[in-house]
Length: 559
Image (cartoon, rainbow, N blue to C red):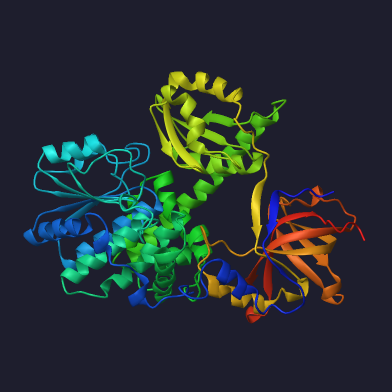
């Protein structure tokens, strides 16, 4: 028997060989069809007026006043892809307009996350304007320190607000406006783009903001904000800007990633472009990625892209090595604890990757802490049905800092607390232990004969796919698994060969990543397969790539 990895919720059923109507039904269900819905909006209608956001106009006015007076604007961002791209968007606008600016991004190990008093003392002087982006909403002490030395502070941020910095700063954060705000789910890159658009308009340079949409799209996809509403439009237009291929840094990065500018989708941003930008902050200095995006020549861009490629390759090797170490440590346990806790001397920048991999493999929450001098800095990834922050709450007194959201959290603690925390999590019992099964929304059960180039091509109208607009998942029920071929250097993946009466003697081939052939045996059996469909990269788009999401023994039995 083949046990599924998910609880399947099949939303619709389309019998017969015709794929017509499948995509329309999915679009309607996702709010893209019918009255009030649209798969794509004209540029002029796609974005709301940000003047309705609390303090947006005041922020723009302060930036313009500082720029026009010849004062310095100091951009302070973050070390991830959203923080890097949002900083570069603002810097490009300042450069285009001709204002004085500088930019500083924090080093993950040396500076840590967010705006601090130490950073304020290092980078600011009386008369500066601090423009913090992707951070700052809760930096009360740092903002007060900036004001004390005569610095005006403007913050563009999208994180949850737990402190009140508005006494000393002009804060633009859509969380202040409530969930009714069109910008509520925007990333920092999206907010930076709206700000740049307003600054260009003040200088009579309308439409220049369109050439910054490439970076806004990258930051939006990388930060996994919902790809609906304005975020969806921003990524749609941003992908067009990427394909226009005008930014030297992105051209070089895409060459290194073996991407073609002729056709870019959100998956390629998420899995090819964003990880290379993130690699700078994970492995070294995020300003290398910032300099790539700001590069004015092909030579400079190629040099920066080569460095990012080396960092990304190192990040992959180290992640694989340290995941293996954690995995081996778990093998010696008679019973896996309900929450996995691991600590070691791995790079701080990959702790989140390690936690995510271990959580995915064990199907339970995983905390991974990296030693950094006398401190440990860590990441937590929650498992199915668990809340990351609630797991850290009971040990709050042992932590220096922690915070995050339901799926992920960060934390730090002093070295002497290590064994206390290890003992706590070894015996930790979740209030509601996870079953290990997440729900899988299957958009439709379809006839295998309907899965072809026409269906794959029509699904493109629903792009960009990502958070809150996932690539549609289909199910083919009662198929026969007639062959399994190993894939990958170590045989960790499979190609399933599947037959069905509707295929008239033909077969469907499906790629099954992280499904080892040894898990399934050799004998044919009836199965249900959940999968995604994409246009094939070969034969001029006349082929399709079918990728397995889950597989289970068919309810129809072995007929």
